[in-house]
Image (cartoon, rainbow over all chains, first blue to last red; front, side, top):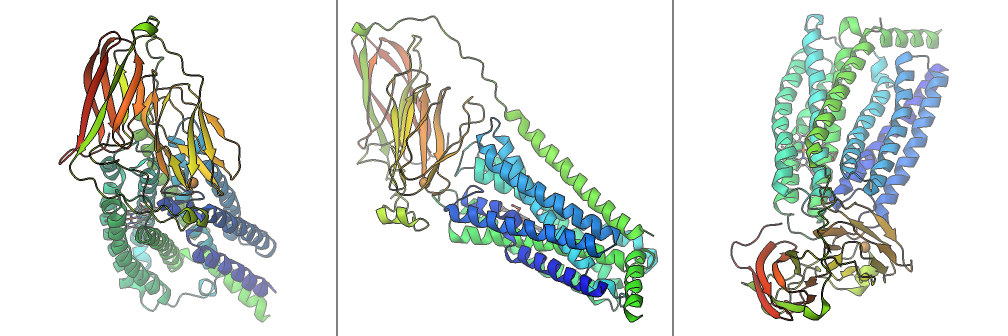
Length: 321
Length: 269
Ligand code: HEM
Ligand SMILES: [Cu+2]
């Protein structure tokens, strides 16, 4: 009985992630199309409305997911996560709405702050929902093929956690740059000269990219060395490398199209839209994969995996009985 | 028992906190830009003697070759595309004259002048602004019309320290004109439409009624200026501002020439 529920839950969660993924830009769309100069309605009402409609359907899905979880699952952490998701999705909507309204507020800085927060928070929500999917997946409930050595627990937790933090900082800097540039930059309000925006946000973004790359390499190497037969861990670690490579290239592409070639262009060009949205999307995937890796590592540490394993074992027993 | 969770939660919290710290930092670094322009000196009123006023006229020239206007693609909005003008609004004018330069009396006028009761108009037509550069006096009404069969939004973004306020309103087809005004002087205040990203114009808010925008030949004409010594300024949207001293005799007429462009004179304001 519970298995059916759990599978169904998994389906919803999977669907959720997929919808998030397919329209991945969703949480971030206002900002992706910030590359069209401003978050909303740019290039026609199409974008604005599209984004809002997708956001609305996701809100419904998140509510359904939460209700379902609370009915069918007794697991504390799942309940907490889905409750957080509901609160988060509301907060995200409010942030989005406010960033639209703030164009009329006395202090123009609100618009930047809100739009950036909306973009960053959207990706955090994306990771949160994906975590729910992970925690309800079959591979999560199954015993890991091989455990990580307990004596390295501290190191592993630290580095994988650090990677998530670095990527969050990276995201915040990227989002801030993008919003300041598209709203106060040369093509829009002309409030801050282009080179100052670059120095303020993009230079830190690039410096932090180097640091994040280093952390990523260390963290994944550490995991790979000890992963043994744990395919999930290996998969996440390898994906991170592939994504990193793509991301560094796309970052340069975004830099070229946004800063170098786009100074005097009267309207966003398709190359700009492509590179920036792709860079942002791959960035979200990296953050997601890093989060997944951090969770998987904790799962595969012998003395830490208890609650979920116990629970899964209990379910197993209930089913066979 | 709850360890795994606790750990994940903990690192989440850490991450969140890092984020918040960053947000704080960012907002701090931006805090410096705030404005608090006190009411500019209300100098003693010297009423303008209408019988003594004169004229300052002249030309703004551009040396060097004018770039060909950039192409734009209006296909995002079929209504715009139908009208079919596919180059940017930033025109530079005929021959050597430089169009769309805002010329104004920057200093030297200490009289009083009320904002004209007549309004000036911005017309959105063919998904372009007419005019591209507008001069208006502080407090004077600006009437904004939409002659297109599509929705525009009008989104002026004044400088952070100007004392003018940003706003954003949309205007559908057939909607009545908007009536707006700006209270503080500011040159080259950008106005954008976010539906049609190529739409960009500039409003210049003057503190006195002595200003003009150059025509296609680069000509300007400032009338009814009382005699005196003035600083006359000419500002272009991308080539910045130049000033000249001008002396005007009673009932006099002065001719002034500004020259922009050529190698090396680029850069913003
Ligand atoms: C670890 C590597 C990197 C990650 C994870 C990353 C992540 C991101 C993210 C998530 C955004 C979008 C923020 C948002 O609006 O939501 C962004 C924006 C940006 N990043 Fe990166 N980035 C990385 C490396 C780089 C590098 C090496 C460069 C340049 C050489 C770069 C240049 C840019 C630029 C120009 C933008 C703004 C795009 C726009 O204007 O729309 N990034 N980055
Ligand atoms: Cu428009």
